[in-house]
Image (cartoon, rainbow, N blue to C red):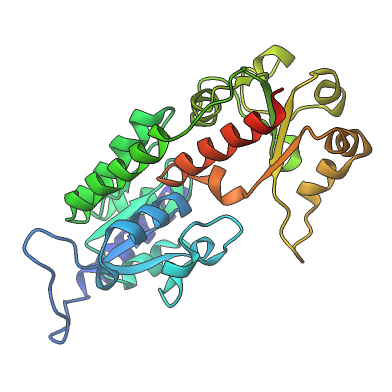
Length: 285
């Protein structure tokens, strides 16, 4: 029964997609370039909005407008948003859909069934992966030169980072005390700043929450948390104000960095490396 419903939904969406001709008033993009790009994931939003022409972008997610997690809130202003539903995507008549690896999977599956396979972005684990993803999206939207410029900007910023003279031990505590595990992009960022990620040492060799006891006993030189946003309290952030962590803050070990710099791979990771390195230089004797 469920399979029949899914097939029926896919067939209905396929018919709907075919029923949408290009309007006579729409100006087509240059040959080979997509003229209606829809993004289904915040990290895709950031790259699409940075690399495509504004006229090419048909819609992004609502997350793109939230400056707490998005680095492109200004660019997203006025751009239509979707909730990631297949019906919404089809109605937009896209010729390129960009999706993430873990979001809107039902929509991605339906789009594949009706012959509109999205460009699915993976999760880079290192800087080379970030560079490759930037180039991938730039080529897909028809502006490879912008991708090269973005990569060059990222590399130029990284080249000017001055690591601390001594490798300090760092523990990252995201909302709900989730940490950055070894082998991830976040771990590569920490190492690029000349620091040591203590997550593995406290038994967190995969992504997961860090118990307060472990955080206290880790004896990290720096504890990195999200910078708080005025007027936006969150239960996920409540743990970060526990007396144990407040004591570390009083000792000058806490470093607050905006959430949006950690959220997605992109040119902003160079700024993140620079901020971590600067915090380490201030802390190191």
